[in-house]
Length: 256
Image (cartoon, rainbow, N blue to C red; front, side, top):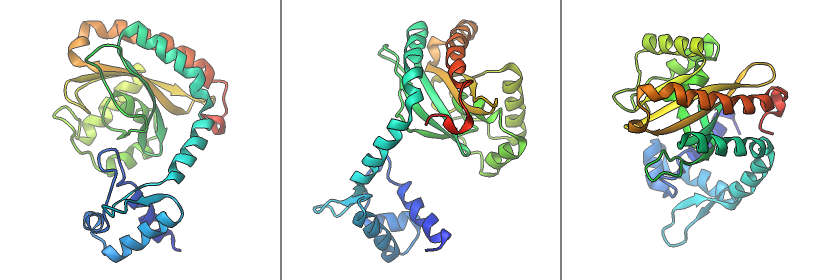
């Protein structure tokens, strides 16, 4: 098997999401603009090895038991989360808002833990949610600390607007990132989702490389400008507790 063939086969798996958990051969082939016979062979191979399962009534494919098994292995490796989670709960109690732990993975941000606000109106998302690095506080604070070549790689992928507040001009984005790095935190309003705010701080490993961000998020009306500094103070206080853990860990040990 060539690397391109493998790459194309793995690309198919990205279409199985919360929003679209089941796919038929022809509809997936149309989405990919690929021959349905090729898609069928790939899906059948995944099914053979347990990575996909086919509904015998609808004939559509869904993720199989193998992913659950591997998910359990990954969960066991995330031992550091057990130490961080209580701190996130305390931050949620401090602020009354949802608390999110986001890690840097390649040129994407991945939310790996969330403690939801107890309030009826709150910021909600799914653990495992991926987002581009150029939009939203939890992502941009990661991008701000990346080397210039990595920043350029993100920008070259394209800057698509999620809302009217998304920064899609490369020069304005770079200026914004420089300012975030200079002040050491990020505040955004409605960049990723309308009507929401995010305040984020960076987290580093033992070698002072950016690896994660800690954020609070909620509806914009609960975080006017005059309350930002107070919320930031609480975020930084709890963030320091988490940073104390991370500062003792080697690069290869992080979240393992």
